[in-house]
Length: 112
Image (cartoon, rainbow, N blue to C red; front, side):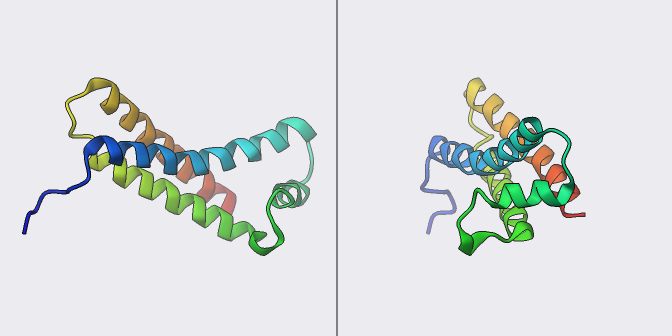
């Protein structure tokens, strides 16, 4: 049995970017509510955020935990494909890791 992965590093990098786009989209959605509606209470902001989702997944902490899991998965996949010698790919994976760390801290602050 081989100890090497059969998935190419470029495919792993592409999957990492796709997974990273999910929490990034949720972050932009959260910020757009603040920008569009201005100063509103936190409860109203959460209700507006949840109104974008179907009724079966309107659980605030569940969405945030899903976002954190996506960030961790993106970081893991980006770290696996970071050993490639292509400089643009390494820079992209570095940005995915830094962005994921930022989004994890942001999501944890929203949970607290």
